[in-house]
Length: 422
Image (cartoon, rainbow, N blue to C red; front, side, top):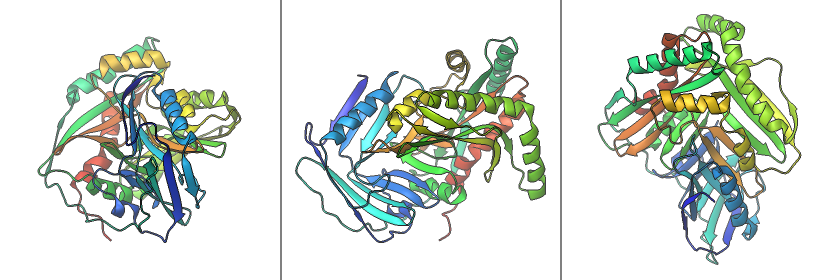
């Protein structure tokens, strides 16, 4: 097992878990402490804090190892769940690295507050025989601005990144591979120590259709769901093919139509859909739409396909993640060749950027998105922002740079913006 480290409140003790319904607690992010856990979309989701157990894992088997550890943790748990919805009862939040190297993390919080389809609940989790008190959740002190924000080049300068894209296009033209996703990083430095809840609130307000998350220093709002598993029903939202919005509605409608007709973007999208569909098909029956739709976000538009299926072999959400990652949407095709090109050209440690982030419950159900439109906290006043672009034959380096800039916009603006209105 590729276990880097483990922190458990009472090693060898069983989990004691209690979930009960509560009145609507209001905005979930208002309950979040600075270092809490968050998973919110359109006001629903979960926030958590405290730490009953924590596993850090590394290596090619990190997903399978995490699934085994979680299965063992909940096997002997004493659970009273009066809610019985996905996410109630025992739950763990996780964030995994893109590459096999580095530390992935799975965390079991002490307290979780959730809301789904009008049902709100509180879960308390402890190790051993101690049962923590069930208190009503209360809003915390609002975050304050970190002041001025300065942005600087990350691992590559703009010109170096453009050269990397040019090299990648040449490799594709030569037939070495079909697609590769190249990431770009930008460093943000804040005037004062950053309270991560500040950008999280703004992201949740401006991008309500995305999954706003915070897990162990990684925060963002991603539009791409790698896998959602709910009682055997699996769903994956695949995004590939992007065009930047202008703010002019009529012009944006014309751009959406051009995106829908773009052979270059359809080729990129097809690689991504095929990689997800091939992985899920090994576990059940699938429905794959013949054509994508255009997903409209405030800053960009994407070609999108929702792949759905029924899982017949009892795989958990984390076990499905093991087969799905990395998809062509964040790596390329063929996978191993694309990985090698990424390592050569990016000169960037992606860490947990473009890796799976989400949660799993005791039933093995859960939601695992791809950590995009995100930043990693590297210190009290320093964050690293990420964006990636799918490179295929015919890709223009300047167009890809514009796309990367558009994908960096959500985090840039969230760091700089005033507090969202009430």
